[in-house]
Length: 153
Image (cartoon, rainbow, N blue to C red; front, side, top):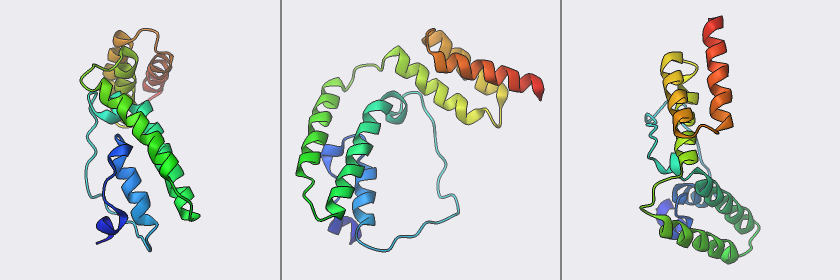
């Protein structure tokens, strides 16, 4: 009922439809969170969160802007139009491979998640990130930090 009352998913928020929906449902009334984990996150170098992170971040910002203006009783039509323009750009890129920089950033994301539990695997992903995009400064920084932390342990 809450989903339907919120209007369901909006295609304009292409890579952040969930964020947009949850914000609109949140605005309808009381919400609660559950402290128990309900799912396991799977990180992939091919996921939208990995390869299209910049666009996804823009969509999330637009969803938050939409939430804020509607919270004050204003129309979000201009924001939805911006989201639709961005979605059109993203649809044109569908099927195109992510840039080498985006691929390296995805590998860096996975390595960052592994650093606290498995230095060996983290180093593997960081080396792959550097091989994929040798000028990726954050990958180099994380690689050197991980090596240093591993030697201290």
